[in-house]
Length: 405
Image (cartoon, rainbow, N blue to C red):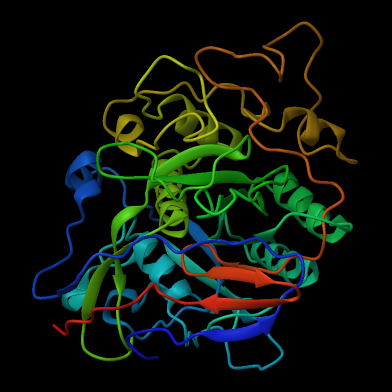
């Protein structure tokens, strides 16, 4: 992989742009990584109580390179769903490896320090080196594999245009995840300044859509907004590998809703490891009702219910987990599944799914997409697509200004 991305040309019809987030200058990795959000999350104190141990997070992405020092011993045997058969442990692009490191990296040899270094990563390769077109079929298979392999959390830091034909297979896979008590997080996309196109799977029922914020707590200007956004997490000035990920340690600050999604997944893992008897409903509920907001609104289309704050749960004991069988979002969707994922709410008890509840949100947080097309899946934090007729030009700009450590 070269320090800068060359332009790639492919034919993509009816695709939405997921623009890359701004990149700051690369930094020599001469000290262990300590990103700005570690202080916000009081992470050293959090690790005295939980590091995410016992939790498996499936990373559906470009593969994960388990040979990096910070990922050695962190990565399970996964699967490769791409016909080239290169293997789940091959990541020519580096995107999936970055997401895995943000979640579970140990910081070894000045590598990326993840938020939840006790987590086990289950790599599922669905994208090749830099771009591809995959249908709902492959994404559905990936979700199904994650569930059957025992992952409690699925991280999908990729997305594609949410338009057109049936997504039955993908919806069935998400229903399977809901029935097996699996949390699914997906990036909302980086298209706010380029049309704000809604992307799936973040837009689908059963998926927690994640937006990005900067160090001041403001929504990042590129972060796609809409009713699909349930939560936000740090997305600016987040560490990522630069240059050849198999070479000497080189870390640069990147950004995007891809990174934010990884940090949201890691936050859920920290909480779930501390409370292993909780259900996905309880973990998500405390994430939502302890999220940080700058005002008293319940939610908005920009950061959802707010910015994830796992430290408030782990250290301060905040957040009421509530009924283990009552989803804080997607309640009608789960109850309508056949068979239902959770028991149907008893009439007259609890807030309406469409109401603004207190203290924990129980409103629908994602748009419905029952008639969407096979999706052109793109890296949530790494792709810009310029469509001219039926020809799209992919500009890969995530990594530049390399400084070797």
